[in-house]
Length: 208
Image (cartoon, rainbow, N blue to C red; front, side, top):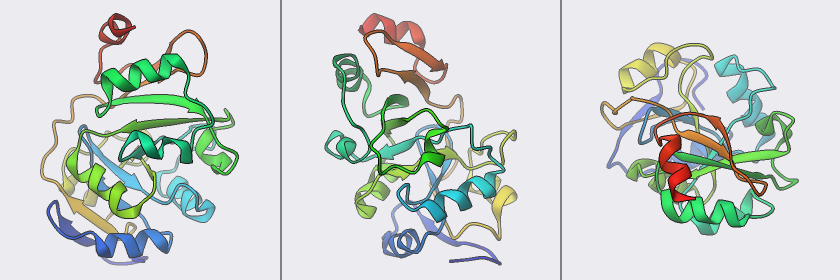
């Protein structure tokens, strides 16, 4: 892991073997999504999750969501998938919609913000999908910025925040950077919009 100095920089088409090794050791990887750059650590490694929170200056009350490569990996983090959630998954995945589920007991509590729930999405970014596939794991999907700062839409902006404190940066060029993912809670019978974002609330309600 890179505690000091610049991170290893990979381009979007690079092999991700080096990222896999960093991930296994509890390191931090910055990578492009369909909206902004995110920070990836192993969500089941409590020390890595703590490092992520420290790096961002994030408080424990703020949960962190994860990205998975496809629906088959959902069972690694979620206890159940409600009929409401299934409808949303079918309509909006892959894409910038984060769906909240009841979390499995093995998911570190720090990721959950004392809610017992975990936000999950399948990203429409080919790089994010390939990274999660290569790591054979869900990956954290918090934006690559210190808490309270604007999320980065380019590798240069990520380096301005974290050069010397992350281990790998996957450079996917400049991203659209309009809004973050929309976050909805689908653990019950009715939908709760937790955060407005890239997918309009009206479009979600129409799909239901």
